[in-house]
Length: 267
Image (cartoon, rainbow, N blue to C red; front, top):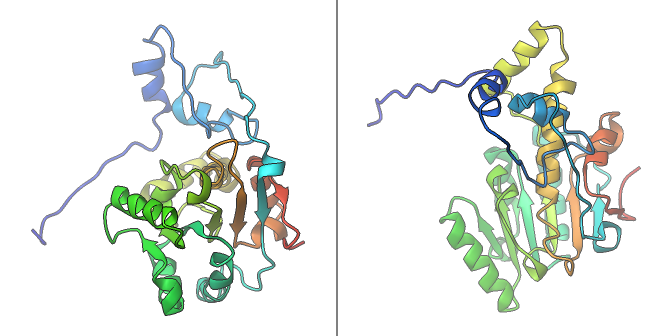
């Protein structure tokens, strides 16, 4: 009913709980993922999950030749995400040219507001080539996308964070990944805000200890949608000038796969 009240509770940190209830009780555990490390560093995941100090981390080299298979492009942007309306308008103006470079693309936003604003600004003929998160189930959306590409048609998937993970689109199904902006935690997320307050209260720096490392993981995960097999190729386009203009941008770029720089990149 519309007057129902739901209360959710989550711990600020789960490291001590996992250490006590899981890691000290199991004979052994193997954790695997393409995004456990930030660059070459497992410090973030070890702290988040309360892993024992003697844990061994191993980064297995990728079979992909990133420099040959993929390009990283950060267009010269006039607007910064700190001005969300102007940034959204600039993305909307760039989107038609970016999309029509490829038969297929995955476009990732960090907010519904920007998602719908950009969609609404697209020309009608290009809007018809787009498949939008929320219109139908994720599985059916992916099926329709594959069918369109198989038929030689253009198809552009538009979504938010959930489309940055668990989406496998090899070959021609994903020739370009477009990321609207660096995926920092949203400021109105109560869990994230509380964690940041907790870090600051302990004398830490929430931006460098929490926000930046987690954004690096999300960005790497999103960029990872591009190459799914050793035969794939394409371009990752990130529409956020802070990757170039801010000092922390170097840390984010270092966390990404070593794509070659696109000649149309700013800087």
